[in-house]
Image (tube, rainbow, N blue to C red):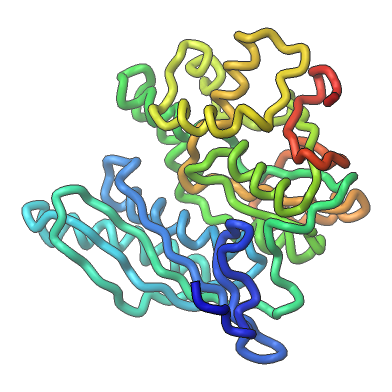
Length: 323
């Protein structure tokens, strides 16, 4: 790799959510790209979910999106109407974020894909990275877990479309409220939870920050039915590979093998357009909660506390302490 430009504030060193390039003393550019295959049957919902997922990277950095470019792969056999519905979903999400769609690119492809390249701005000193969490910081999660499990259950006929719609609605929701709450509370670190699941993205935060975390299992929010389905072995195919990667740094403690396996399937459930993981100092926790509730109309969950641990492990508070 060539030497980085001196104004490149953040590249891929810590697997962060977006690149950050300093424009001047008061502005830095946020650059990110993301696209998905369909998780919803409805073209509009698919477009909105994919756009919300891409915009999330900007909000996770404490930034404001300004404009975006469409990225669309779709078979011409599906026609212009389907393409239009997908992009209308994306356009509505971008507009809600206060940004603009300014074009894009499409190709003929048998497997549909849609997403955005997003440009945003932030004050250089206010960039929130996935590094910076401190021992004692509170860990917040702004959306429930289980989109992967519920999606698999819907495909398997285990739940109805109405039951799956709760997850669809969550995936279509922007992470803008979490971004504003982060800024108001002076968050130390943040990332969003997507395909690498809670455990994978949290591990990136821990290793970048040099700390561990103690999770309060009972406070981790789940979609209705997700735990029951998980215990019935309804799990996406990718959960197994994510869990295999995460297993070395998640402490089983005194949990039984069955309980630990089920919990791992939850924290290793790949999410689509999931919530934000945010590290907040204890004295700023109330500000974060109040601003988030005001901006979103609902509550978020404090799911754990960061702790001193050079090994950067994840453990559950109701299991044995880390050794």
